[in-house]
Length: 186
Length: 84
Image 1 (cartoon, chains in turn brown, green):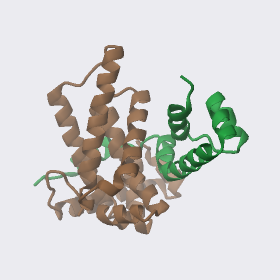
Image 2 (cartoon, chains in turn orange, green):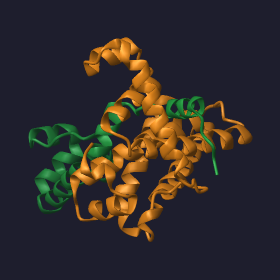
Image 3 (cartoon, chains in turn blue, cyan):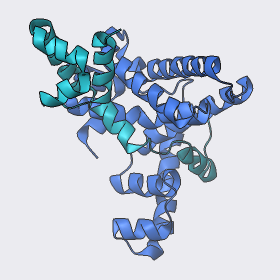
Image 4 (cartoon, chains in turn cyan, blue):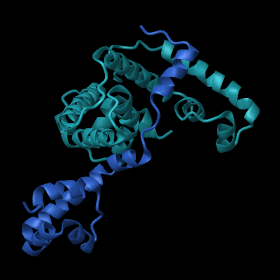
């Protein structure tokens, strides 16, 4: 786990403003899954459009980081920016060809779930590196016990119990948090 | 306050798979791309021959001068210097 991964959003923004390239890499790493999920799972953009929105989001964040008034509000800012750019992309595509647009209620529910998932990932980031690896590989990367065992060089018979232990640590971490409406990191 | 059980936590972890590596790398390279863009633009402002080469054939001009053709840089330069 890099030291930067333990920084709050506000501290990370501060380092980015100072021109710290590693801090920028961490910011992209921290929000890349979120932006990707909003584009593809929330708004169901085709891959090509999702990539354009993804790059545009980070370009604007990089360019306008100095204008962010409250450094702790990085997450809601990125969320709003991503949603707006997804809508622009759908509108642009709609002018060119008919696209499958998510229904409003379904979209809102998917975006809520993505926000909730981000909160879970923030809690995950507080666990040991082994637990992070284990849970990420099994759930987010959909790797089998066998693959996890091979790649982490652990006995295959211990993977299930390790995952269960890590899950229970993650649950304890989540239960200790009060989740706000935007789940922002202070 | 949201309540979580193991099954729900597992579902939520699945909601955020990694973004494609190439996308993440390109976004992480933005600071370097921005520096490169600023350098190219400054040079184009000061050097007429270089500016003309960019207008005539942007990608070849960049390659000839040894600039890394980052997609965002190329797009921005096309916007600024394309002949139209």
